Length: 101
Image (tube, rainbow, N blue to C red; front, side):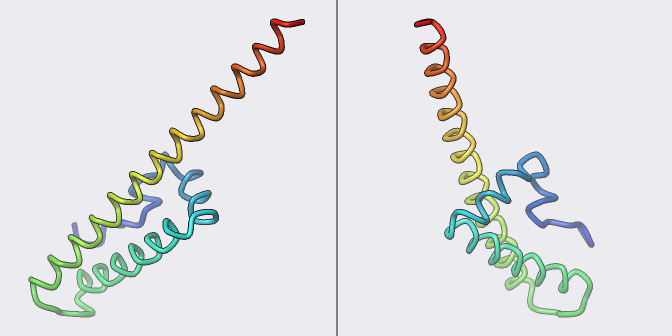
C-alpha cells in the first residue's frame, strides 16, 4: 500500500525486544535487517515516485523484501523457543532445589 511502513518494527511490534537482541547479538540477523531496510527504503522512494523503475524490478524488490522478512521472522521464533527452553530448564532446576530442602 502507498506510504505504508514496512520496517520490521512495524511488521512485528510484538517482537520488539527480540529484534533488538538479535540485531545486537546475531550478525546474520543484523545483516538481513540492514538489507531489508535498504530494500524497504528503495520501495518507499518508488512509491513516492522519487524513482521510477520497471514493474519487473519493483516486483523483484518486493520478493526480496518478503524473503528477508520471512527469514528474520523464523530467526525470531527460533530465538524465542530457545529462550523459553532456557527458562523452563532454569525453573525445573529451581523447583528441584526447592524440593530437596
